[in-house]
Length: 325
Image (tube, rainbow, N blue to C red; front, side, top):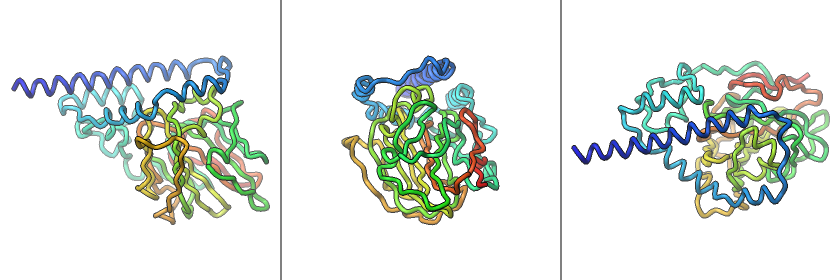
């Protein structure tokens, strides 16, 4: 009995620690995002280099281990209820709304939605995730795009390859979408495509919260990411899943051999994998994150196509994001 009580006391301390960390993260997140945008200025290279010395990959692996610790059954309802409230998780949408059935935080944050809850709209390109729009627009001739308004990066650096010029009558577009910790963490195909290959680019695991994206140039190019290269009816389509601090694990359905945030991997390394699921229909699951992170879409579409979304807008899976004229 004493041994059992000790076990529960240990689990209680662990779970309470997780709760404290989550609450601190939440308060800091809201504080950052409520600050005036004009107060932000980009960091210099020295500041970014110093930040890169922080062992975010190791810390994210440790956080992943904490997420997989089993929460005692008697604690699950109040514990996960606290998280659902803190991160505004709509459990009415969950396929499984029974909080006691989730063994750990990882299972809770990777919950599935009820079937048919996110239909795809009749539009050329739809949202792949429940997310917030950071920026969207056309890519210029030099290949530069906005990370957020006023902070730019080269899309070739992000993708790990030079992007070919679009076909005659087409243009290149991009869209950056942020998944918050309380969002549904699975992501889906925004169009029907033929998947060609996946490139895993190791890197850092810095926070990708909107407030951070405003001050760190090349943030998405610095972080670990998986780039799925595809082709769709209008040309090339890149789907980029960007990792983040505490979100080191990215699962891609096209090839489960891809393992992100592995120990002993140089952050400058990259590996190309074949796609084991070439034909993907619009709305099919593409993969999932731990907690929240960022998706970047880079694609070719007819010139004069128009985004029907704007920065700061909240989206659900399946909502239209671009229409062709």
